Length: 125
Image 1 (cartoon, rainbow, N blue to C red):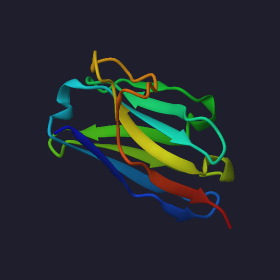
Image 2: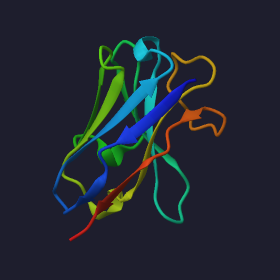
Image 3: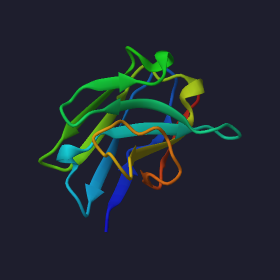
Image 4: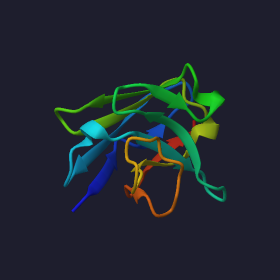
């Protein structure tokens, strides 16, 4: 059974860093693009960035450019989201996702795609 599991969230002060992990099971990530999305309380889910199967990165949000990076370790079947210089507005539940079809393409946030359960990131003093 295909499964995505996020981890690494927590409480961090503004300006701090966190590294989120997205571990896949039931399939290999090698040929998939993986996206990170986030959803703040009371807001719609939004795309953050995506890494293609070849390692190319697409940023969905200009506000994270230069602060967030994404990487993948195919040997560990895991994708990472490194978040630096965190701001209170980065507070959200972060999800990793892959497309249900055409998995080589970056996810567009469809509800019928594959999603993890999410991990909470809180940026606050």
